[in-house]
Length: 138
Figure 1: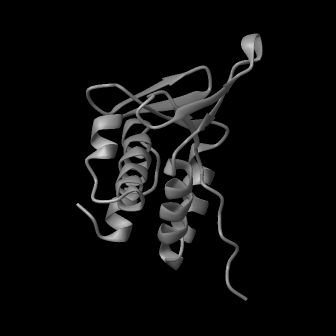
Figure 2: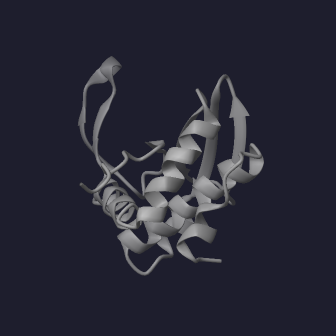
């Protein structure tokens, strides 16, 4: 029986209006947005990565090492990739320009996922190899 496909180990915040468009204004309740394919690209890129058994094992080890700390990725108008810890969460800010420079949305998101997870592993000194080393990138 093949191992279960792990869910993506981070949440995403879309902070650049270049990645989404507002579809309705709900006043104080906020605005409904459509992500214009980026959310689907993130899911497709993740499924491509975890199609490799060694990545599935890596995810299990990564989750064990990080413990209760969650990971949030913000795609926004920053000038560089920045990772920081605060309040039991680790946040990596990823530049919209870098994301949109990719050949297509899925490959750009795959690169972003690798950078984000590598940044978390490196900055928090988690006891797992960099994901890019597992998939043979970099």
